[in-house]
Amino acid sequence: MSIKETDRRYVAGTYARFPVEIVAGKGSLVYDETGKEYIDLTSGIGVTSFGVSDDVWVKAVTDQIGKVQHMSNLYYTEPCAYLAEALCSRTGMKKVFFSNSGAEANECAIKVARKYQAEHKGADCFEIVTLKNSFHGRTLTTLAATGQEHYHELFRPLTPGFSHAEAGNMEELKAICHEKNVAAVMIEIIQGEGGVVPLDAGYLADLQAFVREKDLLLVVDEVQTGNGRTGALYAYMNYGLEPDIVSTAKGLAGGLPLGATLLSEKVQHTLGFGDHGSTFGGNPVSCAAALSIVNRIDEKLLAEVRQKSDYLFRTFLGAPGVADVTGLGLMIGIKPKEKTAGEVVKACIAKGVLCLTAKDKVRLLPALNIPTDVLKKGAAVILEELA
Ligand SMILES: *Cc1c(COP(=O)(O)O)cnc(C)c1O
Image 1 (spheres, rainbow, N blue to C red):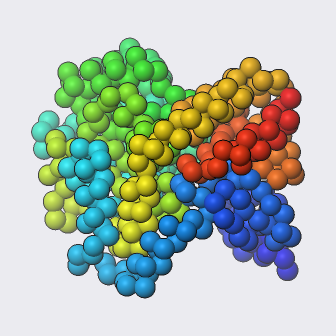
Image 2: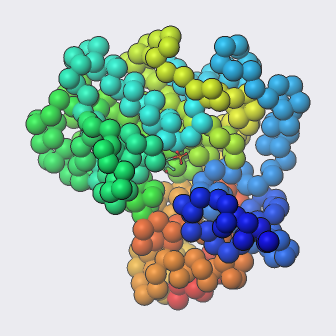
């Protein structure tokens, strides 16, 4: 049997995979089993921040694997401590809880929000407002947080205590907060899976003022937008927000599983011994990888992300076959005029360019360090297919 047949026979059928088997890669170029080269504008859905098999990343990972790959959270290890220190010093947050994925980082954020408000406003202050069209993960609680009905349908009952407000509609959010005992508001700065839909700056400012006034916690899900993706270390920084809790994962460790929940001064002491845990969370190899990634997301790299972003907007805005371009940094959504996003992605694969879809958009999440000439070549192919 071929790899594709074996996979289809034995792997649970949750993914509609493209008929491509990737066997190797370097940076933003990957290769299939026949040796065909592809320009990768997906970075594993925003995960391989510095591309595939990047030398600095490989060295950080292999050095740590050669020392100790796992010790459990019963003992101290250096990468976990140094990564937490780096994340706090770069964000002004005070403490970090490490897990293994975006959904888990959000689970932790939700637990912290509930416990904090139970202690400050009482046990019936647990409702969390998220936005319609949001995506927060696949566990039963983060599915409940996800404001898209079609993800819920087959899996009820979901965790209670979640309400969904229309993105950009402060009145609806205020009405929910009037009606229910709300503990926190949880948002993505750009709805990624929802179609690369950025929230309006004015709405974000109003939301920040409102949560302050009502003493609600502001939780920002930076699983996809974080770690340099939008041209700032975290997307909330583009808008001067002061979230109480930030969750992140995807690009944090550059291709190894790691989630992080960053806790501000206000909630830094909410979790105590035994309140939460994760066997693999804070794994030294993942943390060593992440430390190497975070240390490389400096002002120079972020400026390059913004330049490449400008290039993509200039290239696609108003181009033949393009209805709209949305996003920030290297998180870009292109809405085709006539073709479907799926058709464009499929045609691009045939021509050796990998990109993603998000709802009705072609979504680009290239590696942060994608060479400009590679990006231009990839964009030219997409342009051709959109026209
Ligand atoms: C991908 C994503 C998640 C879920 O992350 P997993 O690592 O798949 O659990 C949560 N929130 C957002 C915004 C995401 O993009």
